[in-house]
Length: 140
Image 1 (cartoon, helix red, strand yellow):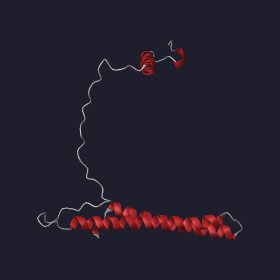
Image 2 (cartoon, rainbow, N blue to C red; image 1 turned 90 degrees about the vertical axis):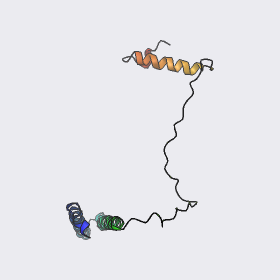
Image 3 (cartoon, one colour; image 1 turned 120 degrees about the vertical axis):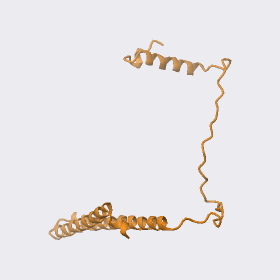
Image 4 (tube, rainbow, N blue to C red; image 1 turned 135 degrees about the horizontal axis):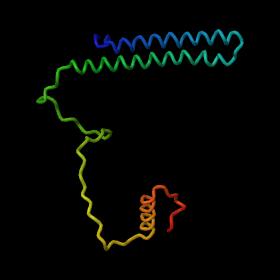
């Protein structure tokens, strides 16, 4: 519980209170405007309390997550002799492994040359050699 009273968490608590009170105040202001005859304010009068509820919901989720992480950090490490191997289920994600390096064989000179590809590569090399030129200046 002490972890929720660090300076960062105090700032979060204060921000939650300020935002919630502010949003509820803006909702009340819209209710008073709607009662004065502004019919568009009825929508805003409903919207501001929803925003306040969302702020409280996000704050509560963050508090629960911090408490769960603190409980996991304080728990003693499991005994490796007692821990069984995890069972693989149908919906489990695969383990992350090191990438496999694949060597590429160089293409020989006797490979069939694609004429369209060769023309496009010639066009690209011309554009690279003439940086100020427009594509319409290409002589090919």
